[in-house]
Amino acid sequence: MSQEPDGGTPHKRPRNAAATREAILRSAVIAFTKHGYDGVGVREIAQSAGVTAMLVNRYFGSKEQLFAEAVDTAFAPRTVLPDHVATLSQGIATRLVERTAPESEHLDPFLLMLRSAANPKAAEIVRAGIEKHAARYLSDQLEGPDADERAMLAHSLIAGFWLMRKMIGSTALVHADPDDLTRRLRAMLDVVVTAPAEPD
Image 1 (cartoon, rainbow, N blue to C red):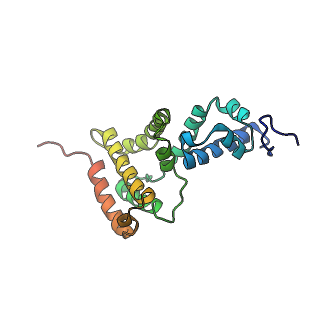
Image 2 (cartoon, rainbow, N blue to C red):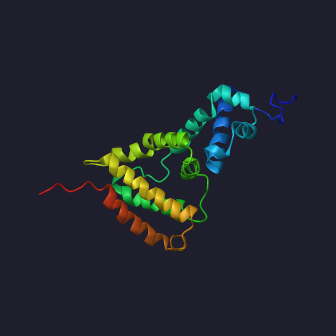
């Protein structure tokens, strides 16, 4: 087996274009989640995917475009948003407490967002990803005026709790009773997502 054009160690590549593209995208999601936009380069992503940097650029055009597709892939699943609007606050609260538990997985869209936010272009891409997926879904579930605003307030609450419990490791939040946390979060989310009462 010959050496790759960039001088790196050769790897066995996927056998078709779709598999190659998927391998690159999967490698990019993992790399950007762990290191952020500025913390990893195309060469490292390519090596992990078993291809060359030239091939990454052939499929995605640039690191920026690769990041945009990685964000779209990472943000598309509804990580903490439930399927039924009737259980919206309860569903979010329950999943959020589960996902931020000390033993939970670390590879999640919030880390990708957090570790890339310092780069203005990456932050713009992340914002577009949030608005396209989670924010739009939640906004569509909300009745009444200012649904977009209330949806983003809910996401701000989610992100703040995620940061303090999972990333900062706030002692009070880490050691709190999960059922109690869920109950309090549900009450806070109810205030945010409930449509304002009509004036008398």
